[in-house]
Image (cartoon, rainbow, N blue to C red; front, side):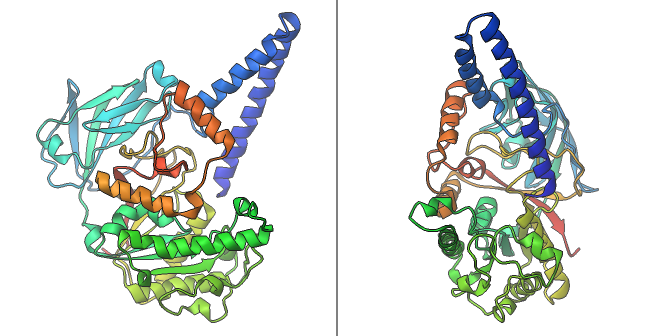
Amino acid sequence: MEGRKQQLLKRHRRHKRLALAAGLLVLLALAIWVAWWWLPVLLVLGWVAHEAWFADHLFYAPDQDYQYAFPDGTPTHAVQLQSGVVRVDGDVGTADTLILQVEICCSWLGRWLDPHVLIGDDRQDFERGVKGRRYLNLSGQLEALRSGRLTLNGRRCQIRSADVLYAIGNADYRQQRVMVIAPHADDAELAAFGLYSQAAEASIVTLTQGEIEAESYQALGLEQAAAARLKGRLRSWDSLAIPLWGGVPQQRCVQLGYYCLQLADMASSAERVCPSRESGEADIRLVRGQNPLRLPGDADGLPTWNNLRADLAALLEHFRPDVVVTPHPQLDPHSDHIAATRALLEAIEICSWQPQTLLLYANHLHDNDRWPMGPAGGGVALPPVLQALPADAMWSLCLSAQQQLDKAMALSMQHDLQGRQPWKKRLRRIVQYLLAGRRWPATGENEFFRKAVRRHELFWVRRLVE
């Protein structure tokens, strides 16, 4: 993760340690001055309370306003709530992406149970203790909105006002040539399975093998390096094979074979060779055998920034995409994700083919590890943005129930998302299920089955050619 994320984590853990130390002092005082048996009882109750209500990584105050700017000229409409029904001034036309700015305030119960808003047949969740400006995603509700049938109902929160509706019209990017840049196997599926599975022509480029953190494979009797090599081979295979479930043939999928968490180091010096941190390998050609074309990096197999940039330029010229789907460089903090989009932009500068549009996605956030909040299948409200972002337009692609199921099955094929969660997380989920009312899908235990399988896939639209 990038520096700001690490700083937030350190601050969060420091505050936790201070709170824990203060709590232990109080417990010891009770044990000494009241009765010793209070100590184990209160320790257990404190642990249960922490797991139920204080274990989320939320690195901002929930009463902070979200800070969004939309491009000049974005159509806006005044909105009124009349007995919970949304009334819009003017005709929203055929806008495909509808974002409603609201003011929300949680009830006392919303400080302990997840507050959410019911939007017709949709549900969008927010932080416990929420208070302030938020943005609901009404995409897919156009007909109900036009006919005056769209209702908003807060649960464990109140909608104090509905201020303005942003009605954003986009081209149907599914009808254009789409290329998805995936820093790791599974990023394409997490962010854009619904898009690439419906695209008239799609290609998928995965930058890294994703070989690190292979402890589970060491249980097979392998040393760390051998386990990392096995994991890299498996995830490389995932990146080439799983898109076929979404209708993308193998000849339109490419695995570049660079090494996980090394892209930022590569970017720091264009000729620097950055081998794997764990597998002991330094030849990217070892997982390129199934690629449909020869690339510049195949000449020497060195994991360098120059090779990555040249590979991407060659792929742009080969597949000639109109639209490139890539991580949001300001919103997604993962160092490989930031470097992936930087490499793409540098490749665009040196190649003859010029895409028209970037669709930016965020599979991770700086400030909130639970976004999108709430259960699987719900809509995707806009994520927390507490520092100004570029004023990009947005495109919210709606997925049917069948498309969501197909996406969940694609994720279930990913080796990195398989298997049981660690016992501590399983125990935490039991506590949250019983005390906090949280639910998880039956499709898989990994948190991404909850976060990524939604009725919306959300992209920020950045035009490269006007």
